[in-house]
Length: 112
Image (cartoon, rainbow, N blue to C red):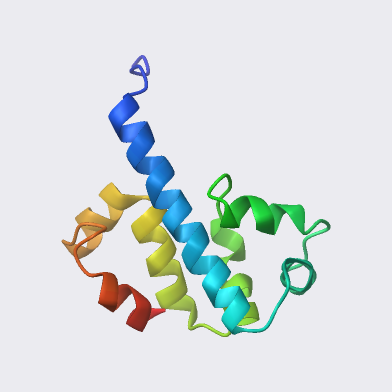
C-alpha cells in the first residue's frame, strides 16, 4: 500500500507533542539534578547532544532505553513510558487507554 502524503496539520501536532515531551523530560532531568552530559553518561550515550535533541523535540527516547532514562531521572519506569507514549504515539495511546493526549495533564505528572 503506498504511503500517503504528509498531512501538515498532523505534522504540526506531532512536533508540538514532541516539544512538550522534551520540556517534560528536561524538567525531570533538572529535578534530578543532572546535566545533559551526566544523563547521557548514565544511560550509556556517547554524546550528550542526543539528550539535547530529545529535549528540544527533535529526537525521541528509544523504547529500549526508556527504562534506563526513567531510572536516571528518578521516575517510575511504567509512568515514564506511558508519558512518552502519550506524546510520541497519541493515537496508540488513545487506543490503549481511551484518553486523548491532552485530556489529563495533571495525571501525566502524577503517573511519571
